[in-house]
Image (cartoon, rainbow, N blue to C red; front, top):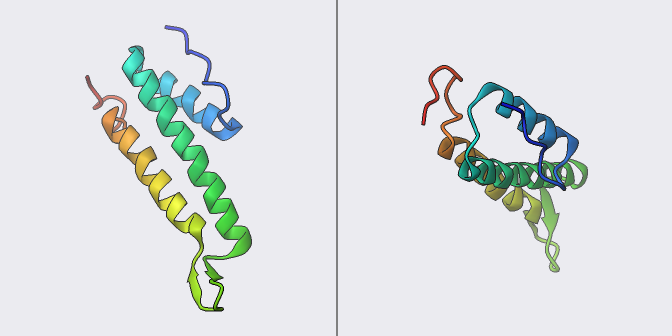
Amino acid sequence: MAIPKPPAGLSPEAGKIWTKLHGEYELGDIGAVQILGAGLRAFDTMRQAEALVAAEGVCTHDRYGSPKAHPAVDIARTARAQWLAALRMLGLNRAPEEAGP
């Protein structure tokens, strides 16, 4: 079966993951394709938020000068949970020979 092209708008890193997972697992039905696409968009969001935190630090300061968590920390956490949930929904948290329908 031919590997479908990654959805438009994914990062090169997410596109490589798309290709790799399609090569290792049977992801032919439309539901699996949609779940993987949504998961990889969350993956990209996670990576963007992680880069922002790496550049600006984990903490920022509110208008009173008190330290608080950088808003991107929560974005990264939420996006990571969405990415991992997509992998679990697809059964991709197991080795390819163990994954099944």
